[in-house]
Length: 290
Length: 109
Image (cartoon, rainbow over all chains, first blue to last red; front, side, top):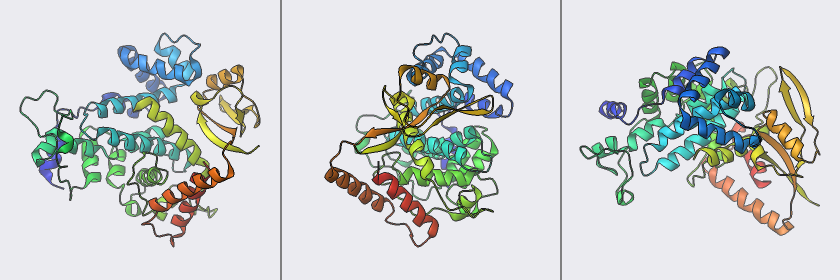
């Protein structure tokens, strides 16, 4: 990968990652600390709290008065609030870039994120759903950096950077008519991993993202395998509505590492039980977070 | 009457929908059945589902499509699945199983 390109993506002042994501991930193995992070964040972010209350009301809890973070967590459950916060924070981050293709980017990321989280609940391998969700949501994050003006201007494509442009990431009139910058030869998985690394996300997530396109050679950690399968299912089920969705490979070693095939029981691949749930969750996530 | 089964988010549930599968809840590590398959949703049961942190339910709903329309919908879905898998090596057993399952799922939705 062009090193300068990677540095330019990381140096992008607009790529300031929401630190609540790291705080949630850092306390996953400590229930009390994890709860403290949620309460502290929600109590200090009234706009986010309002969005969470709205999501709770839409989830059939409209008859209850939710006046503080404690009410919210006890009614909805800490794990769901945690998941909503993770998606909401990364959605706000992605939306903030508003380059011409951000919506397609986010639709694909959201679908893969939901798919990855659901798979973690279905597979063996002890992958925490929150880790699966964040890794899957961010698996293509380097693309967001590539398409911002900060970088694409450097390559002479859409959204050329202008000095002093306060809203560098915005799509502008006429952008659509410009050619897409040429990113051929860029290792997007490596770039995405590099970006996650620069944000201090767990090594496990960075490594999984880096290895997502080489699941056969992935490390013993099944998270990279999960990203591969989540990507395959996102395409197979048209979860992101992409016309170009294609499936060319489903790695057997990856499926084996996730306990989807083989093992002592010689299990045969059976993903039918999760298709309905994944599809329903993506449909719902599109309404709530697009 | 023909019916078909869908998984829906609880936000999409409406009164009188019929559960296609039982709904279980886990409370303090103990799993118990909230409602059996065939239960018809009421305001009370919807509230109970929400308070039990249930997010998704499988429902059975009447399929009003004609046989011809069912066949057309299945053909459209199958065409799309074949397009998606057009570059896949279906001699690979894992790929073949995935293809079959996706085809079955999408042709019956």
